[in-house]
Image (cartoon, rainbow, N blue to C red; front, side, top):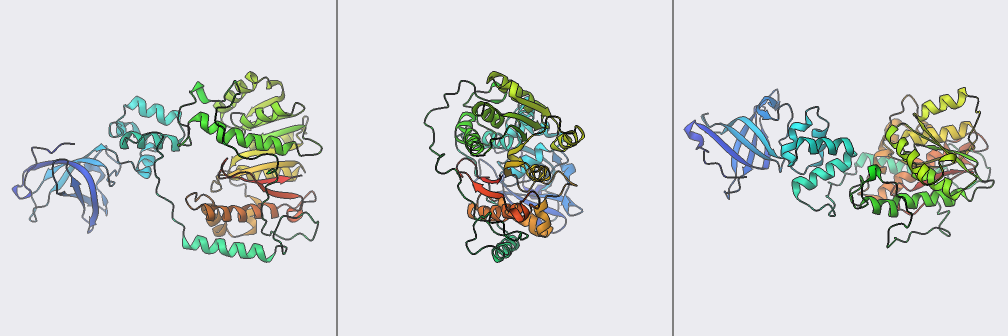
Length: 463
Protein backbone atom coordinates (compact mmCIF):
# COMPACT_ATOMS: atom_id res chain seq x y z
CA UNK A 1 0.00 0.00 0.00
CA UNK A 2 1.67 3.17 -1.16
CA UNK A 3 0.99 6.88 -0.99
CA UNK A 4 -0.21 7.79 -4.49
CA UNK A 5 1.50 10.68 -6.22
CA UNK A 6 -1.51 11.65 -8.31
CA UNK A 7 -3.68 12.54 -5.32
CA UNK A 8 -5.06 16.04 -5.72
CA UNK A 9 -6.48 18.65 -3.39
CA UNK A 10 -10.27 18.34 -3.22
CA UNK A 11 -10.86 21.94 -4.20
CA UNK A 12 -9.07 21.56 -7.52
CA UNK A 13 -11.88 19.62 -9.15
CA UNK A 14 -9.40 17.31 -10.84
CA UNK A 15 -8.95 13.59 -10.68
CA UNK A 16 -7.69 12.04 -7.45
CA UNK A 17 -6.63 8.55 -6.46
CA UNK A 18 -6.01 7.41 -2.91
CA UNK A 19 -5.25 3.95 -1.58
CA UNK A 20 -5.63 3.07 2.09
CA UNK A 21 -7.22 0.98 4.82
CA UNK A 22 -10.81 1.73 5.81
CA UNK A 23 -10.58 2.79 9.44
CA UNK A 24 -13.96 4.52 9.76
CA UNK A 25 -17.22 4.34 7.85
CA UNK A 26 -20.40 6.34 8.34
CA UNK A 27 -23.59 6.90 6.44
CA UNK A 28 -24.10 10.62 5.71
CA UNK A 29 -27.77 11.10 4.93
CA UNK A 30 -29.42 9.09 2.15
CA UNK A 31 -27.02 10.24 -0.55
CA UNK A 32 -23.56 9.05 0.44
CA UNK A 33 -21.31 7.09 2.78
CA UNK A 34 -18.17 8.66 4.22
CA UNK A 35 -14.97 6.60 4.44
CA UNK A 36 -11.82 7.50 6.33
CA UNK A 37 -8.80 5.89 4.65
CA UNK A 38 -5.44 5.46 6.36
CA UNK A 39 -2.60 5.64 3.84
CA UNK A 40 0.77 4.10 4.63
CA UNK A 41 2.72 7.29 4.18
CA UNK A 42 0.44 9.65 6.08
CA UNK A 43 -0.28 10.14 9.77
CA UNK A 44 -3.76 11.55 9.15
CA UNK A 45 -6.67 9.92 7.36
CA UNK A 46 -8.12 10.92 4.00
CA UNK A 47 -11.90 11.32 3.71
CA UNK A 48 -13.79 10.23 0.60
CA UNK A 49 -17.50 9.97 -0.17
CA UNK A 50 -19.19 6.98 -1.84
CA UNK A 51 -22.54 7.80 -3.51
CA UNK A 52 -25.62 5.91 -2.42
CA UNK A 53 -28.58 4.94 -4.58
CA UNK A 54 -31.95 4.18 -2.97
CA UNK A 55 -30.22 4.29 0.44
CA UNK A 56 -27.72 1.58 -0.62
CA UNK A 57 -24.12 1.81 -1.76
CA UNK A 58 -23.98 2.29 -5.54
CA UNK A 59 -22.53 -1.13 -6.41
CA UNK A 60 -21.81 -0.03 -9.98
CA UNK A 61 -18.90 2.02 -8.60
CA UNK A 62 -17.29 -0.96 -6.89
CA UNK A 63 -14.79 -3.40 -8.36
CA UNK A 64 -15.32 -6.36 -8.18
CA UNK A 65 -18.79 -5.14 -9.08
CA UNK A 66 -22.12 -6.09 -7.56
CA UNK A 67 -20.96 -6.71 -3.98
CA UNK A 68 -20.46 -4.31 -1.08
CA UNK A 69 -16.97 -5.03 0.28
CA UNK A 70 -16.62 -1.77 2.23
CA UNK A 71 -15.75 -3.31 5.59
CA UNK A 72 -13.42 -1.87 8.23
CA UNK A 73 -9.92 -3.18 7.65
CA UNK A 74 -10.24 -3.59 3.89
CA UNK A 75 -7.63 -1.88 1.73
CA UNK A 76 -9.25 -0.05 -1.18
CA UNK A 77 -8.24 2.30 -3.99
CA UNK A 78 -10.66 5.17 -4.51
CA UNK A 79 -10.63 7.33 -7.63
CA UNK A 80 -12.80 10.30 -8.49
CA UNK A 81 -13.03 14.06 -8.37
CA UNK A 82 -13.26 16.78 -5.74
CA UNK A 83 -15.57 19.05 -7.64
CA UNK A 84 -18.59 19.79 -5.44
CA UNK A 85 -19.10 23.04 -3.54
CA UNK A 86 -17.94 21.52 -0.26
CA UNK A 87 -14.72 20.24 -1.77
CA UNK A 88 -15.67 16.59 -1.12
CA UNK A 89 -13.69 13.86 -2.77
CA UNK A 90 -16.50 12.12 -4.63
CA UNK A 91 -15.63 8.53 -5.59
CA UNK A 92 -16.40 7.37 -9.12
CA UNK A 93 -14.60 4.03 -8.78
CA UNK A 94 -13.57 2.00 -5.74
CA UNK A 95 -11.39 -1.10 -6.14
CA UNK A 96 -10.78 -3.73 -3.47
CA UNK A 97 -7.03 -4.25 -3.03
CA UNK A 98 -6.93 -6.46 0.05
CA UNK A 99 -9.73 -8.05 2.05
CA UNK A 100 -10.10 -7.63 5.79
CA UNK A 101 -9.94 -10.70 8.00
CA UNK A 102 -13.69 -10.48 8.54
CA UNK A 103 -15.63 -13.73 8.84
CA UNK A 104 -18.93 -12.40 7.46
CA UNK A 105 -17.24 -10.68 4.52
CA UNK A 106 -15.34 -13.79 3.49
CA UNK A 107 -18.35 -16.10 3.92
CA UNK A 108 -20.45 -13.76 1.77
CA UNK A 109 -17.75 -13.64 -0.90
CA UNK A 110 -17.52 -17.44 -1.06
CA UNK A 111 -21.29 -17.59 -1.65
CA UNK A 112 -21.01 -15.48 -4.82
CA UNK A 113 -20.97 -16.95 -8.32
CA UNK A 114 -18.04 -14.68 -9.18
CA UNK A 115 -16.08 -15.38 -5.98
CA UNK A 116 -12.91 -16.08 -8.00
CA UNK A 117 -12.69 -12.39 -8.91
CA UNK A 118 -11.85 -11.74 -5.23
CA UNK A 119 -8.83 -14.08 -5.26
CA UNK A 120 -6.25 -11.24 -5.61
CA UNK A 121 -7.69 -9.51 -2.53
CA UNK A 122 -7.07 -12.73 -0.59
CA UNK A 123 -3.48 -12.87 -1.89
CA UNK A 124 -4.38 -16.03 -3.82
CA UNK A 125 -4.61 -17.20 -7.38
CA UNK A 126 -7.97 -18.20 -8.77
CA UNK A 127 -6.91 -21.85 -8.81
CA UNK A 128 -5.87 -21.70 -5.15
CA UNK A 129 -9.18 -20.17 -4.11
CA UNK A 130 -11.21 -22.67 -6.15
CA UNK A 131 -9.32 -25.61 -4.67
CA UNK A 132 -9.77 -24.22 -1.16
CA UNK A 133 -13.52 -23.74 -1.53
CA UNK A 134 -14.17 -27.05 -3.27
CA UNK A 135 -11.87 -29.09 -1.03
CA UNK A 136 -12.77 -27.75 2.41
CA UNK A 137 -15.76 -27.11 4.60
CA UNK A 138 -16.82 -23.47 4.81
CA UNK A 139 -15.35 -22.84 8.26
CA UNK A 140 -11.97 -24.27 7.26
CA UNK A 141 -11.94 -22.24 4.03
CA UNK A 142 -12.77 -19.03 5.88
CA UNK A 143 -10.10 -19.79 8.49
CA UNK A 144 -7.46 -20.37 5.80
CA UNK A 145 -8.33 -17.14 3.99
CA UNK A 146 -8.16 -15.14 7.22
CA UNK A 147 -4.73 -16.63 7.90
CA UNK A 148 -3.60 -15.61 4.42
CA UNK A 149 -4.80 -12.00 4.61
CA UNK A 150 -3.78 -11.39 8.24
CA UNK A 151 -0.50 -13.31 8.18
CA UNK A 152 -1.30 -15.17 11.40
CA UNK A 153 0.20 -18.60 11.94
CA UNK A 154 -2.08 -21.57 11.38
CA UNK A 155 -1.43 -22.66 14.96
CA UNK A 156 -2.77 -19.35 16.31
CA UNK A 157 -6.58 -19.57 16.28
CA UNK A 158 -8.41 -16.65 14.72
CA UNK A 159 -10.62 -14.86 17.18
CA UNK A 160 -14.18 -14.83 15.97
CA UNK A 161 -16.41 -12.16 17.43
CA UNK A 162 -18.29 -13.77 20.34
CA UNK A 163 -21.97 -14.24 19.63
CA UNK A 164 -24.31 -12.09 21.67
CA UNK A 165 -26.72 -13.59 24.20
CA UNK A 166 -30.10 -12.10 23.43
CA UNK A 167 -32.10 -11.01 26.44
CA UNK A 168 -35.29 -12.42 24.94
CA UNK A 169 -33.65 -15.82 24.40
CA UNK A 170 -32.42 -15.91 28.00
CA UNK A 171 -35.92 -15.09 29.25
CA UNK A 172 -37.23 -18.05 27.25
CA UNK A 173 -34.49 -20.34 28.61
CA UNK A 174 -35.29 -19.37 32.19
CA UNK A 175 -39.01 -19.86 31.58
CA UNK A 176 -38.46 -23.31 30.07
CA UNK A 177 -36.16 -24.33 32.93
CA UNK A 178 -38.85 -23.33 35.42
CA UNK A 179 -41.50 -25.18 33.41
CA UNK A 180 -39.43 -28.37 33.37
CA UNK A 181 -38.50 -28.07 37.03
CA UNK A 182 -42.15 -27.71 38.08
CA UNK A 183 -42.95 -31.09 36.53
CA UNK A 184 -39.79 -32.86 37.76
CA UNK A 185 -39.29 -35.12 40.72
CA UNK A 186 -37.85 -33.52 43.82
CA UNK A 187 -34.36 -34.73 42.91
CA UNK A 188 -34.64 -33.57 39.33
CA UNK A 189 -32.63 -36.57 38.13
CA UNK A 190 -33.33 -39.10 35.38
CA UNK A 191 -35.53 -41.91 36.61
CA UNK A 192 -37.13 -45.00 35.15
CA UNK A 193 -39.67 -45.57 37.91
CA UNK A 194 -42.60 -46.26 35.58
CA UNK A 195 -44.66 -43.45 37.12
CA UNK A 196 -47.33 -41.43 35.37
CA UNK A 197 -45.84 -39.97 32.18
CA UNK A 198 -45.59 -36.21 32.08
CA UNK A 199 -45.07 -34.12 28.92
CA UNK A 200 -41.46 -33.50 29.91
CA UNK A 201 -39.37 -32.67 32.92
CA UNK A 202 -35.87 -31.40 33.52
CA UNK A 203 -33.30 -34.18 33.68
CA UNK A 204 -29.78 -33.98 35.08
CA UNK A 205 -27.53 -35.93 32.69
CA UNK A 206 -25.27 -38.59 34.14
CA UNK A 207 -21.71 -39.71 33.34
CA UNK A 208 -22.56 -43.35 32.75
CA UNK A 209 -19.01 -44.30 31.74
CA UNK A 210 -16.92 -42.15 34.06
CA UNK A 211 -15.70 -45.29 35.82
CA UNK A 212 -14.42 -47.02 32.68
CA UNK A 213 -13.44 -44.23 30.27
CA UNK A 214 -11.66 -41.05 31.28
CA UNK A 215 -10.08 -38.37 29.16
CA UNK A 216 -6.30 -38.35 29.30
CA UNK A 217 -4.68 -36.52 26.38
CA UNK A 218 -2.43 -38.78 24.35
CA UNK A 219 1.20 -37.76 24.13
CA UNK A 220 1.83 -39.69 20.93
CA UNK A 221 -0.29 -40.24 17.84
CA UNK A 222 -2.39 -43.37 17.81
CA UNK A 223 -0.43 -46.55 17.14
CA UNK A 224 -3.16 -47.62 14.76
CA UNK A 225 -1.43 -48.26 11.40
CA UNK A 226 -4.23 -46.82 9.29
CA UNK A 227 -5.61 -43.31 9.86
CA UNK A 228 -8.88 -42.24 8.28
CA UNK A 229 -7.55 -39.04 6.69
CA UNK A 230 -9.29 -37.41 3.71
CA UNK A 231 -7.52 -37.83 0.37
CA UNK A 232 -4.34 -39.06 1.99
CA UNK A 233 -3.62 -35.67 3.56
CA UNK A 234 -0.77 -35.64 6.10
CA UNK A 235 -1.65 -35.61 9.78
CA UNK A 236 -0.04 -32.18 10.17
CA UNK A 237 -2.68 -30.55 7.91
CA UNK A 238 -4.98 -28.21 9.80
CA UNK A 239 -8.37 -29.90 10.15
CA UNK A 240 -11.72 -28.50 9.06
CA UNK A 241 -12.26 -27.60 12.69
CA UNK A 242 -9.58 -24.95 12.50
CA UNK A 243 -7.39 -25.16 15.60
CA UNK A 244 -6.06 -28.73 15.45
CA UNK A 245 -4.13 -30.73 12.90
CA UNK A 246 -6.04 -33.65 11.42
CA UNK A 247 -3.96 -36.06 13.50
CA UNK A 248 -4.65 -34.12 16.69
CA UNK A 249 -8.36 -34.00 15.89
CA UNK A 250 -8.53 -37.75 15.33
CA UNK A 251 -6.55 -38.56 18.49
CA UNK A 252 -8.18 -36.09 20.86
CA UNK A 253 -11.71 -35.82 19.49
CA UNK A 254 -13.06 -38.22 16.87
CA UNK A 255 -11.40 -41.43 18.04
CA UNK A 256 -12.25 -40.67 21.67
CA UNK A 257 -15.93 -40.25 20.86
CA UNK A 258 -15.90 -43.56 18.96
CA UNK A 259 -14.28 -45.20 22.00
CA UNK A 260 -17.06 -43.87 24.21
CA UNK A 261 -19.70 -45.30 21.87
CA UNK A 262 -17.98 -48.69 21.80
CA UNK A 263 -17.75 -48.80 25.60
CA UNK A 264 -21.40 -47.79 25.90
CA UNK A 265 -22.56 -50.44 23.40
CA UNK A 266 -20.75 -53.12 25.41
CA UNK A 267 -23.04 -52.36 28.35
CA UNK A 268 -26.19 -53.38 26.49
CA UNK A 269 -27.62 -56.78 27.39
CA UNK A 270 -28.22 -58.51 25.08
CA UNK A 271 -25.64 -56.85 22.84
CA UNK A 272 -26.73 -55.33 19.51
CA UNK A 273 -26.54 -57.58 16.45
CA UNK A 274 -27.20 -55.29 13.48
CA UNK A 275 -26.82 -51.51 13.90
CA UNK A 276 -27.82 -48.67 11.58
CA UNK A 277 -25.35 -45.78 11.80
CA UNK A 278 -27.28 -42.62 10.84
CA UNK A 279 -25.13 -40.06 9.02
CA UNK A 280 -22.09 -42.31 9.43
CA UNK A 281 -19.98 -40.46 6.84
CA UNK A 282 -16.44 -41.78 6.47
CA UNK A 283 -17.10 -44.74 8.76
CA UNK A 284 -14.94 -43.79 11.76
CA UNK A 285 -17.59 -44.91 14.25
CA UNK A 286 -18.79 -47.93 12.25
CA UNK A 287 -15.26 -49.28 11.81
CA UNK A 288 -14.48 -48.77 15.52
CA UNK A 289 -17.65 -50.65 16.48
CA UNK A 290 -17.10 -53.50 14.01
CA UNK A 291 -13.45 -53.84 15.08
CA UNK A 292 -14.28 -54.00 18.79
CA UNK A 293 -17.50 -56.06 18.60
CA UNK A 294 -16.83 -59.03 16.27
CA UNK A 295 -20.45 -60.26 16.31
CA UNK A 296 -21.95 -56.93 15.22
CA UNK A 297 -22.91 -55.83 11.70
CA UNK A 298 -23.30 -52.14 10.83
CA UNK A 299 -25.29 -50.38 8.11
CA UNK A 300 -23.91 -46.89 7.42
CA UNK A 301 -26.39 -44.45 5.84
CA UNK A 302 -25.07 -41.15 4.49
CA UNK A 303 -25.99 -38.97 1.51
CA UNK A 304 -22.41 -37.82 0.82
CA UNK A 305 -21.12 -40.10 -1.92
CA UNK A 306 -17.44 -39.23 -1.53
CA UNK A 307 -17.58 -39.85 2.24
CA UNK A 308 -19.28 -43.20 1.71
CA UNK A 309 -16.63 -44.29 -0.81
CA UNK A 310 -13.89 -43.26 1.61
CA UNK A 311 -15.66 -45.24 4.33
CA UNK A 312 -15.75 -48.37 2.17
CA UNK A 313 -12.00 -48.06 1.54
CA UNK A 314 -11.30 -47.53 5.24
CA UNK A 315 -13.41 -50.55 6.25
CA UNK A 316 -11.65 -52.71 3.67
CA UNK A 317 -8.20 -51.65 4.85
CA UNK A 318 -9.20 -52.30 8.48
CA UNK A 319 -10.47 -55.76 7.56
CA UNK A 320 -14.14 -55.29 8.55
CA UNK A 321 -15.72 -54.61 5.15
CA UNK A 322 -17.64 -57.90 5.31
CA UNK A 323 -19.60 -56.64 8.33
CA UNK A 324 -20.24 -53.02 7.26
CA UNK A 325 -22.73 -52.08 4.55
CA UNK A 326 -22.46 -48.54 3.18
CA UNK A 327 -25.57 -46.95 1.61
CA UNK A 328 -25.41 -43.65 -0.29
CA UNK A 329 -28.84 -42.15 0.42
CA UNK A 330 -30.66 -39.84 2.78
CA UNK A 331 -32.02 -41.37 5.94
CA UNK A 332 -35.53 -40.61 4.66
CA UNK A 333 -34.79 -42.73 1.59
CA UNK A 334 -33.46 -45.46 3.87
CA UNK A 335 -36.68 -45.40 5.90
CA UNK A 336 -38.74 -45.83 2.72
CA UNK A 337 -36.50 -48.72 1.65
CA UNK A 338 -36.60 -50.27 5.12
CA UNK A 339 -40.39 -50.22 5.25
CA UNK A 340 -41.00 -51.29 1.65
CA UNK A 341 -38.59 -54.22 1.86
CA UNK A 342 -40.46 -55.77 4.78
CA UNK A 343 -37.30 -55.69 6.87
CA UNK A 344 -35.55 -58.64 5.17
CA UNK A 345 -32.39 -57.78 7.11
CA UNK A 346 -33.89 -55.58 9.79
CA UNK A 347 -31.72 -53.74 12.27
CA UNK A 348 -32.11 -54.03 16.03
CA UNK A 349 -30.19 -50.92 17.09
CA UNK A 350 -29.79 -47.25 16.07
CA UNK A 351 -26.69 -45.13 16.65
CA UNK A 352 -25.84 -41.62 15.54
CA UNK A 353 -22.78 -39.56 16.44
CA UNK A 354 -23.28 -35.88 15.70
CA UNK A 355 -26.08 -36.35 13.18
CA UNK A 356 -26.88 -32.74 12.31
CA UNK A 357 -30.05 -31.08 13.55
CA UNK A 358 -33.27 -32.83 12.63
CA UNK A 359 -31.36 -35.91 11.48
CA UNK A 360 -30.80 -36.87 15.11
CA UNK A 361 -34.53 -36.47 15.75
CA UNK A 362 -35.36 -38.56 12.69
CA UNK A 363 -33.08 -41.31 14.05
CA UNK A 364 -34.84 -41.11 17.43
CA UNK A 365 -38.24 -41.26 15.74
CA UNK A 366 -37.19 -44.35 13.76
CA UNK A 367 -35.99 -46.03 16.95
CA UNK A 368 -39.24 -45.22 18.74
CA UNK A 369 -41.52 -46.33 15.90
CA UNK A 370 -39.71 -49.66 15.58
CA UNK A 371 -39.11 -50.17 19.33
CA UNK A 372 -35.34 -50.27 18.85
CA UNK A 373 -32.63 -49.52 21.36
CA UNK A 374 -30.40 -46.58 20.54
CA UNK A 375 -27.49 -44.28 21.38
CA UNK A 376 -27.86 -40.87 19.71
CA UNK A 377 -25.60 -37.83 20.19
CA UNK A 378 -27.25 -34.75 18.59
CA UNK A 379 -25.33 -31.91 16.96
CA UNK A 380 -25.93 -28.63 15.04
CA UNK A 381 -29.10 -27.95 16.99
CA UNK A 382 -30.18 -25.03 14.78
CA UNK A 383 -30.30 -26.98 11.52
CA UNK A 384 -33.80 -27.58 10.15
CA UNK A 385 -33.39 -29.12 6.70
CA UNK A 386 -35.72 -32.14 6.86
CA UNK A 387 -39.04 -30.29 6.58
CA UNK A 388 -41.88 -31.30 6.55
CA UNK A 389 -40.47 -33.64 9.23
CA UNK A 390 -40.97 -31.98 12.62
CA UNK A 391 -39.01 -33.16 15.67
CA UNK A 392 -41.31 -34.44 18.39
CA UNK A 393 -39.75 -32.26 21.08
CA UNK A 394 -40.78 -29.11 19.23
CA UNK A 395 -44.37 -30.08 19.86
CA UNK A 396 -43.77 -29.54 23.59
CA UNK A 397 -43.11 -25.81 23.19
CA UNK A 398 -43.72 -22.90 20.85
CA UNK A 399 -41.70 -22.38 17.68
CA UNK A 400 -40.19 -19.18 19.06
CA UNK A 401 -39.17 -21.02 22.22
CA UNK A 402 -37.60 -23.89 20.26
CA UNK A 403 -35.68 -21.50 17.99
CA UNK A 404 -34.39 -19.52 20.97
CA UNK A 405 -33.19 -22.66 22.76
CA UNK A 406 -31.31 -23.97 19.72
CA UNK A 407 -29.65 -20.59 19.18
CA UNK A 408 -28.42 -20.64 22.77
CA UNK A 409 -27.03 -24.17 22.40
CA UNK A 410 -24.72 -22.96 19.64
CA UNK A 411 -23.19 -20.16 21.76
CA UNK A 412 -19.85 -21.81 22.44
CA UNK A 413 -18.46 -18.50 23.69
CA UNK A 414 -21.00 -18.75 26.53
CA UNK A 415 -20.47 -22.36 27.55
CA UNK A 416 -22.62 -22.25 30.70
CA UNK A 417 -25.59 -20.94 28.71
CA UNK A 418 -25.02 -23.54 25.98
CA UNK A 419 -25.06 -26.39 28.54
CA UNK A 420 -28.26 -25.12 30.14
CA UNK A 421 -29.98 -24.91 26.77
CA UNK A 422 -28.75 -28.40 25.76
CA UNK A 423 -30.14 -29.75 29.02
CA UNK A 424 -33.57 -28.28 28.30
CA UNK A 425 -33.70 -29.41 24.67
CA UNK A 426 -32.57 -32.96 25.41
CA UNK A 427 -34.87 -33.21 28.43
CA UNK A 428 -37.68 -32.36 26.01
CA UNK A 429 -36.39 -34.96 23.55
CA UNK A 430 -36.46 -37.50 26.35
CA UNK A 431 -39.96 -36.46 27.38
CA UNK A 432 -41.29 -36.69 23.81
CA UNK A 433 -41.09 -40.51 23.74
CA UNK A 434 -44.49 -42.17 23.97
CA UNK A 435 -44.23 -45.80 22.82
CA UNK A 436 -42.54 -49.06 23.79
CA UNK A 437 -42.78 -48.46 27.53
CA UNK A 438 -41.00 -45.12 27.12
CA UNK A 439 -43.97 -42.82 27.60
CA UNK A 440 -42.79 -39.47 28.86
CA UNK A 441 -39.19 -40.64 28.49
CA UNK A 442 -39.32 -43.66 30.81
CA UNK A 443 -36.69 -46.08 29.56
CA UNK A 444 -34.66 -43.26 27.99
CA UNK A 445 -31.56 -41.90 29.71
CA UNK A 446 -29.75 -38.63 29.19
CA UNK A 447 -26.00 -39.10 29.47
CA UNK A 448 -22.88 -37.09 28.70
CA UNK A 449 -19.28 -37.80 27.82
CA UNK A 450 -16.26 -35.62 28.59
CA UNK A 451 -16.74 -32.17 27.08
CA UNK A 452 -13.12 -32.06 25.93
CA UNK A 453 -13.98 -34.68 23.29
CA UNK A 454 -16.71 -32.42 21.92
CA UNK A 455 -18.84 -29.55 23.14
CA UNK A 456 -21.92 -31.36 21.81
CA UNK A 457 -21.57 -34.10 24.41
CA UNK A 458 -25.17 -34.90 25.39
CA UNK A 459 -26.33 -38.42 24.47
CA UNK A 460 -29.79 -39.99 24.51
CA UNK A 461 -29.76 -43.70 25.34
CA UNK A 462 -32.70 -46.08 24.98
CA UNK A 463 -32.31 -49.51 26.56
